[in-house]
Every structure is written in C-alpha cells, then in structure tokens.
Length: 186
Image (cartoon, rainbow, N blue to C red; front, side):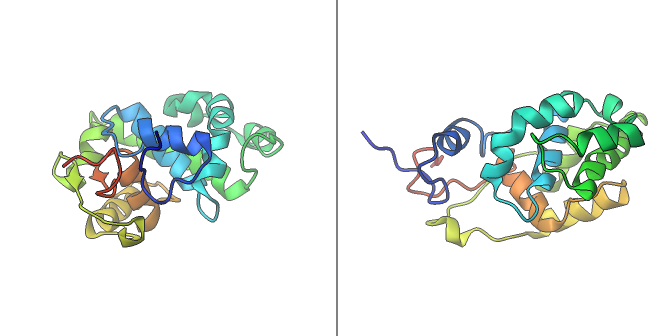
C-alpha cells in the first residue's frame, strides 16, 4: 500500500528513507547537530538529494564530523579535500566546514552546550506546524534569522537564515510534515 508523504519527497528511495526516518525527528546530540548543520551548508545552490547521496563520503572525508579534528585541518588537507570526487569540491564550502568546526570548538571550550544553544531558538521544544502543502513552508523564520545571526557571530558560515530553517526542519526543531503525511503528528 502506498503511503502519503510530504510533497517534496518524490520517488527516490534514498529521499523516502530520509523523510521517513530522519527528517523532522528531534535531534539533541551536539555532535550530530554540528554534522547536520555543516551538511546543510553544503546544500547551498544544490539539491538536498545531491548532498544526501554524498553524506557517507563527507563523513569519511571530514573525520565523521569530529569538530576537534576538523579544526586542525591545514592547507594541505584542504587541497586533498578539493581533489575528493565524493564531496562537493568547492573551496568556500570545504573551508566553511573547517571554519564551523573552529567556531564550535571555541564555543564548547568555554563550557557551553551546542545543543542547548541551538534548541534555545525554539524554546527547547519542537514547533509543530500544520501545513497542507510543502509549498506553504516559509524559506526562513524569525527563529532561523536569529540562529543565523548568532552562528555568524560565533564564526560560522554557510548558515544563512534559509539554510538555518532547512536545518531546523531536518533536526525536528520545526516539525513541518504536512497534515496529509503519514509522519504528521496530530
């Protein structure tokens, strides 16, 4: 029997599995949130499916998104990454993950919790929306604008308000499954 999913999903099995098991499910682990934020930044100008298909390659290339390791990447490592066909070989995007790792490390080295920080933009709890179509999704919200501004102040980049909103949807800060989707929580 065919299940009804959010309209953006399409027929690709990778996308369907991502939608069914990952997208919109609350994530509270700081390391996982860091990884997802970096991956969402890689999407800029591309489809999410492109990045999703390269996710394992990114994990291997970027030390499973361990910010302490990534923050030590030097020019030689950057050049090596730019030759890796398994990731998007864009110097600005590669550098953004390193820059974000440095921002993350500076934040947590002061005893701060990255997860609490990110979740503070939605009051610590998922915001459940009641959209009838994925066409109703905003591209950004006041919460994603505030998150973007705060992350940039911490030294992050590729974290504009639109990327932040997509990230917030993906990690369940906004539960934007449409009301006809089988994942929608009434």
